[in-house]
Image 1 (tube, helix red, strand yellow):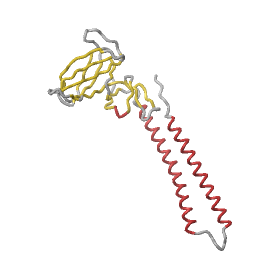
Image 2: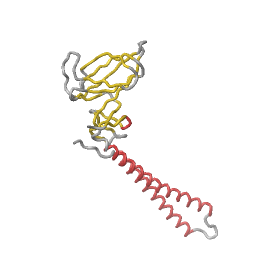
Image 3: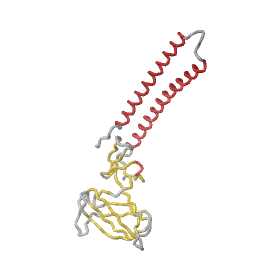
Image 4: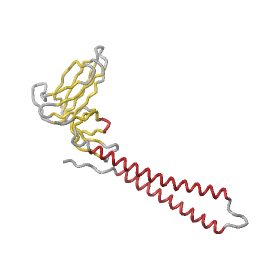
Length: 221
């Protein structure tokens, strides 16, 4: 069973910084109240404190106090949102998903990619193992829209390649020999979630993906 990492340390640093800032503001506010009280006790009856200035100072420090409370509440909301996001991501562990990517697992004699050319083209497909060695290559006519490409694990010489991750690269051209973009997607199981990253990443087929790369969740079985 894979272990799931804890929350990011950057969040802890931000919490400490906020606490220090709040402490300084609170200290200044307390100092102001002390000075104000002393001033009221010792003011000259013949030349009392200007009422307008007194009111403005009170309003300003009241606004600071309210801002401190608002900051605390916002920090609480952010913490709750991060916890909710982490809980939601943990639900992906063990799920079979489809993501934008080019690395698929060869297992039980089959590795599957979903390719999607932007227009009709002739595509040169190369499949390499984790070391970069070419396991298979071929040229195919492809059309726009999602279509599956399944490799049976056999090399061009007929040899059987071992199970593991394999990466597909595609170079395609149209009838005028102009380059054509071909996107690839792969299916795999979410092995773990790393919550120390910002944003968190999911480990799929030995590679890391952010949540926005997930296109579909596939029912297992």
